[in-house]
Length: 177
Picture 1 (cartoon, rainbow, N blue to C red):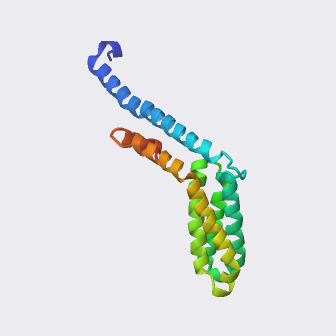
Picture 2 (picture 1 turned 60 degrees about the vertical axis):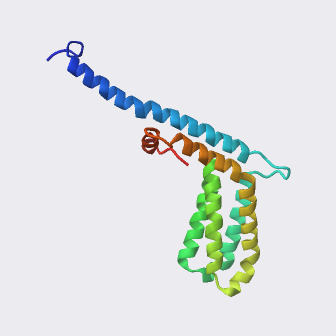
Picture 3 (picture 1 turned 90 degrees about the horizontal axis):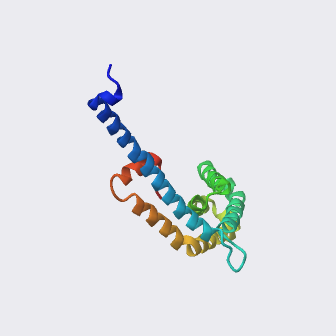
C-alpha cells in the first residue's frame, strides 16, 4: 500500500474529507460564538436593575409567585391537565438561569397561567382574579422592558443563519433563536 505522500488520489480524498469536516466545525464554532455574544448582550440588559431595583429575574420571581398563588386558589376546579401544565410552567420558569430562556419561559408561564385561569370555576375565579391581574400586568411589564432587546437577539440569530451553509451548520449545532 502506498503512503499518503505517494498517492495523489488518497491525499485528495483526505483533503476533501478534512475540508468537509472543517466547514461545519469551524463555521459552527463561529456561529456559536456570535450567538453567545448576542445572548450576553441580552443578558446584560435583562440583569440590569431598573429604578425600582427589578430585573428580568426578579420580575419572573414575582410572576412565579402570582402564578403559584393562582394555582393554589383554583386547582380544585381547574382540572388535572390544566393543573399539571401550570405546575410544569412554574417549575420550568423557576429553574431557568439563562436570561434568553428565562424570558421565553416567563412568557410561556403567563400564557399557561391565563389559560389555567380561564379553566377554573366561577367560585375560584373570584379568588384568583387578583392573581390573574398580576400575571397579566407582569407579562406586559416584562415585554415592555425586554422585548426590544429580545427581538434584537432573535434578529441577530436569524441573520447568522439566514444563508447556506450557515443555516445547515446552525441546525447541526442547534443554533438559533
